[in-house]
Image 1 (cartoon, rainbow, N blue to C red):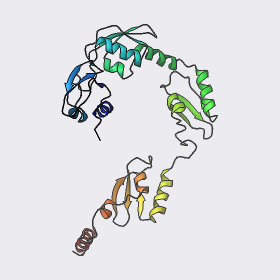
Image 2 (image 1 turned 90 degrees about the vertical axis):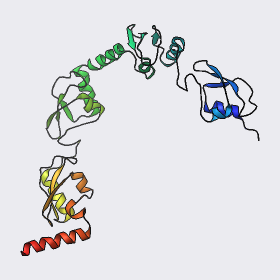
Image 3 (image 1 turned 180 degrees about the vertical axis):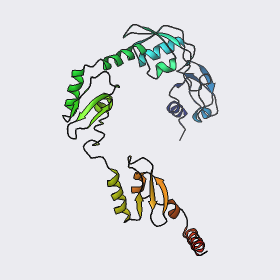
Length: 271
């Protein structure tokens, strides 16, 4: 069965058009690159191996005209005014939404980063929420909190009071409404673990083989434990301990090493 080079080339290089019939893989044919319009001759064998346009090597090389057309397709609100030079040289353009003139690199525009002025206006609108509107949003999200201070913006902390436990705390409106964070004392309705509780948890889990020596600061805060068998202290997080991490002095050495250590310890005691 004769190999269909034309289909292979067009499947592999969507920007390349074969302009002549292909008689064999070794005979050069005329090609055109849709990106920059460049025409050249190349062997089908080379193309199916991955060789592309000599001019752009598969990377778009825009002219002012082609870049303007590309921006019209990707963002109709961007009107190119200046002359295109390359992807990293700023070009003058106009935003149709606010009619302001901007200078941005083509790379920035192609990745969707548009008008700074429009972005600032959007941020300002988000920040101009009234205090009454914010309280309404909090009440809609949960009826278990009081808002005790004035709303200023989504990133300025507001004072809350948890009706259930009476605890007062500060939190940004963004974290409360968007991230769903709640009372740090109750951890969203679940009482925060205390030092005494965690100590009893360690004791019950290891049947008294380990003790917790620090103040409990959270599941991911490094804390000090003591192994009651070897009386050596070590540090790990409460989360790691509950998942099975134990004394590094006893469990990171081999049985033989531990035997030698015990022998030497007894020898020292006898002297």
